[in-house]
Image 1: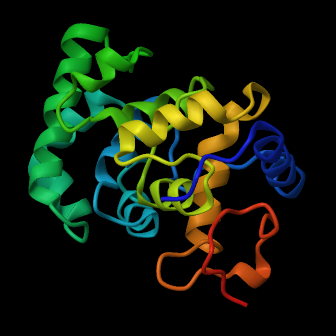
Image 2: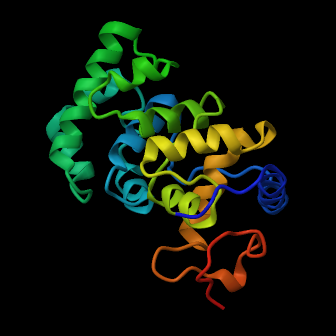
Length: 214
């Protein structure tokens, strides 16, 4: 675990991220808050590419909880059976859809507590929805962010909760809204797990990682 970088270094890191990609976007395809929620729930232990492929034909048919319930669990399974844990995920999607209809008039709630109370929705999923749909500075820590945070010293922590707190505490406020997107993209394409592409990294000179590659 690298040391926590100082404020001025952090500010320069995120200034560069912003200059390179002013409006970073999540890579999960969605049509509205409900389909975003479903897509994120389906993405657990699966790639965004595989989820997008599965939902390409699903979401035009079921873009509301009411339509998903009408579709039914077995037809949902047919659409998502290429995704890992698809049976359990299908069950959760149907259950959360029923709760949204029964308790929220078919709308996706905008509070973390309400979202986390839904079947198959953890803190990371809730934070993605809060950030991407309601543009709140919620930090969804996945494996990429956990790796980059610890490797580079941007947000060191022994678990995802600690990394989330480190981002909230140490990333300058003006960059909080897009912080988790920049870090995910950096981890996915540059600061990769096995062999980071340090030679192409725009924050190489600021990063605390000692074993840099060429």
